[in-house]
Length: 117
Image 1 (tube, rainbow, N blue to C red):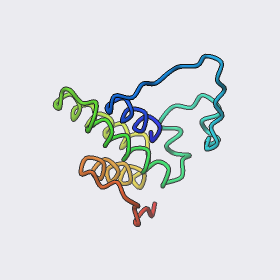
Image 2 (image 1 turned 120 degrees about the horizontal axis):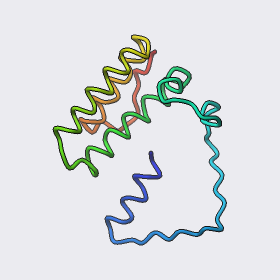
Image 3 (image 1 turned 180 degrees about the vertical axis):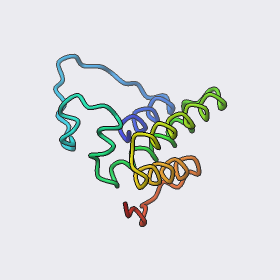
Image 4 (image 1 turned 90 degrees about the vertical axis):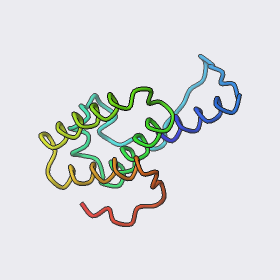
């Protein structure tokens, strides 16, 4: 999510992005479950708590800050996502996701000290 937010801020400030079809990009931080096709909730079960928390928190903040055009749809979508998370993930992961969303909406983007799940 960080790269999306960073490049989006470049365009907001009038910067230009160029696509080079000959570039090769190698991600240095690839979790094992992303090397193959994995459904989101399956990956969420396998993900380290800190990775899941920061991904959801930062994504929530970015979408809410820059992309949301319809607040009702945004929160309806979030409620549906939380319902699915409660059904498919354990209680601890669900609590972690709720905290991540709450922090993302509040703009609490610093280091999180209480990620015990």
